[in-house]
Length: 169
Ligand code: PNS
Image (cartoon, rainbow, N blue to C red; front, top):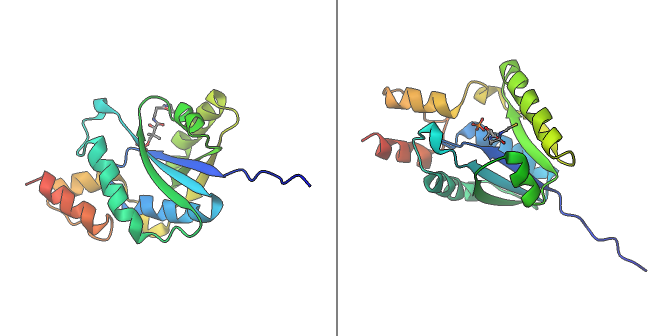
């Protein structure tokens, strides 16, 4: 009898992650039951003048991942340049995970999803709805509030907050 070869359900979760927030972690947790492997894909975008280098961002995610119980899902961190759709294809992913916090996110995310589908018709975007408590949390807001002396505890992992402190010393 021929055994059916099991295909791994692999997704990428692309983003700037400058820095990683608890909102990102919420989306990662929600995507765990849906896939066998999720590649957290950090965009290397030198034009954006980030707070953290790509290497620092990958490391901060790798440090936090052990706090997540991945269950049967394998979590991997990688970085990429260029098109998200091309990176997803190179990785053999069939899905791109994106979080939706509020209606305001939808229009931008819809345009990206349609463009990515045009670029790679075999790859679907999966939108996951973020927890209400993180609906206003974005990396840029965290950076702005933190650099102006505001508190971001509970909104980013403690290890990330410590790294933000080091950066702004
Ligand atoms: O965390 P972000 O900044 O919202 O993530 C945006 C990201 C990285 C997913 C998006 O800017 C992107 O995909 N950039 C890579 C270049 C690309 O593929 N552009 C076309 C998107 S349709």
